[in-house]
Amino acid sequence: MEAVVYNGPREIGPVGLMAANSAMIQGASKVMIVDRHPDRLRLSEEVGVIPIDDSKGDPVEQVMEHTGGGVPTRVANASDIKPMTLRDTKIRR
Image 1 (tube, rainbow, N blue to C red):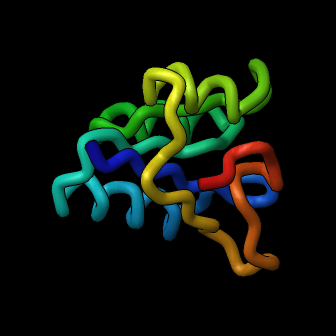
Image 2 (cartoon, helix red, strand yellow):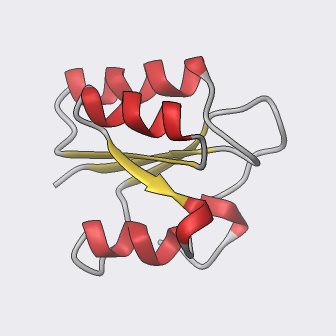
C-alpha cells in the first residue's frame, strides 16, 4: 500500500493540493494532506484525499490512524520552506 502525506510548515496551498491529486491519479492507495483551513480540507476530501486537520490533534497520530499504525510510504513537504518531515516529528523510516 502506497500512503503519501503532504504537509507544510503552516498549511497546504494550491500546489500541495495539486500534488496530492497527482498522487491519487498515479495510484497511491492513501493520500493525506495536513492543514487547518476548512476550505482546503473540504476541497481535498472532494477529490478523494484524506484531510488531516492539525488543529484537532497531533497530525502524526491522525496519520497513523489512517495507516493502521504504520508509517506513510512517502512524506512530502509542499512548501518553499526548509525540508521537513511531518511537522518535524516522530515519523521516521
